[in-house]
Length: 406
Image (cartoon, rainbow, N blue to C red):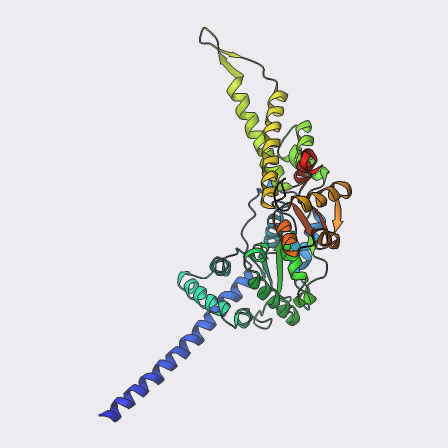
């Protein structure tokens, strides 16, 4: 009868609702246990650099350990900045692994799906949990309640039973969001402020010295950031010499020439130092033995300095070519739209080494162009000192050698 159909249909709805409620409660509890476990044990991949090649900057490590092991009522979030290639990721990963518990490290790509994927992997979801997490997170963060979802996703201090201090979430490479997904960066900054207000979780943003730190400093959510960002700078000349000569085994004269070209940019020192070593071995082996008329291998002495000078010349060309590409990206070469204003800034920096940010903005007189110049790896903005400098020693070498900037 119609009455039986209605009763059957109503019963089905109730059963379905109860099942969905039970499943939701079970899934939320399971989610909670996974996240709690992740924070209690910590999650961070190993640095890409071999342990014996690490350069320990004690001042930086001390500062990073301070924010990765916060006091119980810590109520700020943090920003760590440094130019591309200064070793930010390496040192932060090493410190996170040393601290271990209650620290989760996540690399932040500009694409939402990949960010969620990296976050899910850091937490340790299985495949099915991972799929559910991605779909839920994506739906929420693209909707109107992304902040609420992210906040509810985090465990409270009470739930972290065995901890005496707030857990730490490290978000690396957030400068990519500043360029391609600024709204997502704003949301994450708002969430970091909320967590800091509650002393429930400390978020640490890692960024290059580009537009992202400046964007963050302009927002009201900056009120809960520790006012002085931690700046990871290039190695000193002494540290660079120790790395090239003692750790990579490069001759003193070549070491000094590399430092003159590259400064203390650890990524470049590693790349070109290893290239020198590989090239020296290859060149020596390829011309150390020659066939004479009798088919007998005869040994010839090869002047190693000649080989090294050839290799240094090739390194110089490669480095200058890369910097030239950055200037084209910024459209600052002769005949390009930013050449005139770019030349003015370059000449100021050649003379003074750095200019304050307000002077930079006045000289450019166009916010869009100012952002373009800071994103093109030609100039660098330091949020701690609020100054603009050349992005690297190699950039300074390039402009000093280039007649169109004199």
